[in-house]
Image (cartoon, rainbow, N blue to C red; front, side, top):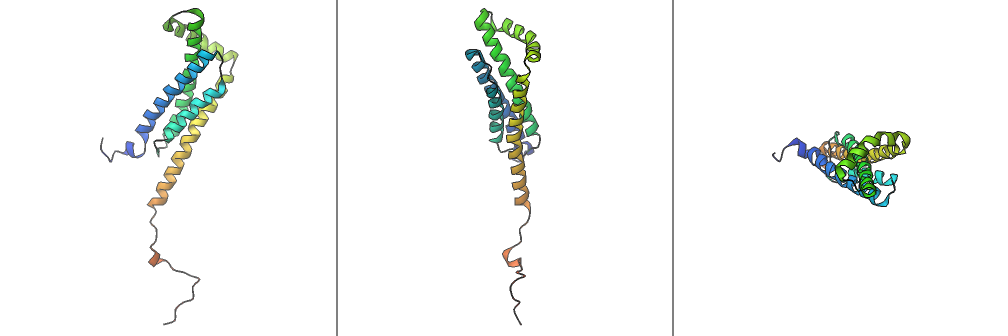
Length: 168
């Protein structure tokens, strides 16, 4: 890649990689919180969305593709965190290995969501948070770029219409 690569200029590739990293970190933290506390704290799922949004915002993106990706990454991170937390709880309770615990959790997870759909609400809020942060940053960066690319008149070319005209 060269310095003139458009993917680097608009922050697309750094935004994607940063967002994926934040997704994994947020999911691991959320899963550990659920697994070791035994409580599913919905606000922590929103924290995953905030983490993803802030991380992707940090690369100063201008690509309009990144806000929807931030929402998707936030949603995936919250879901992965919840699954990871349930796996940790299952392993601690049953003594099974992580592979069989993951299989058990994935088999019962859809039913758990149907019984208690408020998790979906927190996932949606997390997605909205991730989208909102990155969207505001992209909008501000695009407006700043547009404003800087508009040619400004020189001070010598400006006419003061309210000043009295000089007589020859």
